[in-house]
Length: 387
Image (cartoon, rainbow, N blue to C red; front, side):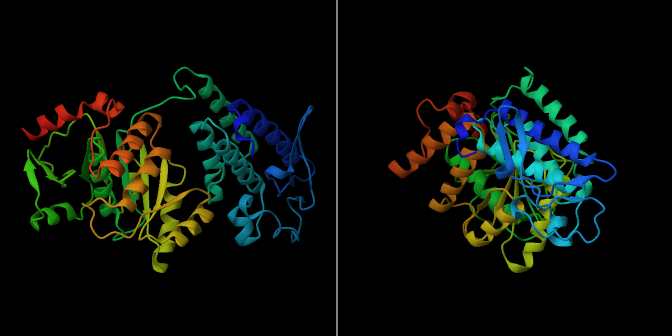
């Protein structure tokens, strides 16, 4: 994994498949299944004859009373129920196998969404949400291989961002603030974006009524680089420009937000002590969603790192900020990094050009020949929107 340029998707598939075959053999031993308990990259040996597993020092029978070895193992690969409840099962090994798969995929050059989805289900914090057996895991692995080879789902398929969902783990942790800031940032980069309020807080309408220099046109409200739509009733219809990105603010309604497909799903969490439990609960609710990105609010980098360790994924830290409608260097850097890494290949050149335009000229400009300028025709779209 340290030589990531040599890790291909076919290599990942073959390695994980052979490891799963070893685990399947152990789980079907008679008269009592054996739980390996200590699967990690260091214990997988690659040889001419295929994969071998080493170090069975803490392996145990499934019905072994007491399980004196249960508290041993590598935390990064250890299932929550084993760490916290000293409980092992077949799904304990499935969790470790999913973690190994995740690390291999992230270390490789080509990130397969099919393989990542498998790893996410295999490493779900709740046992009942994981695969019931190694065979069920293998069946999903076969389908992933077919997807990777299919013309319908090419391995390096690129797409444009069209919909970003922003939802929080609880109320009053800055979900709307971040959604507005992101919309403002995108439009500032000459990437058309429209904020849409889909929560009952009515915060957008309250802000507009407060007289914050909004200009209205056909139900759309503009302020500087921000363009948005408050939550209207069923009798009001507003035409949203087809070209551009929808930034949809679901407030704290994760159950509704997770039902809508999106190119990016931003989960906003709080960093204060009394907000940490809801952050964990919220993460478990959306765990496994495709294109999930976790944001820790209030500029608490220490808590963001703690969440990253608990969730076993990168967690972005949103800076402490008092004005969502104003651009700051800290926010611009965060959104630039997030969208460059999570937003797809086509967008990256535009974000990079946008960043340099800001730094060099002190103002946003449409980058010459940018892919967004060509695809969206921003100037024409903006003119039509205003008139």
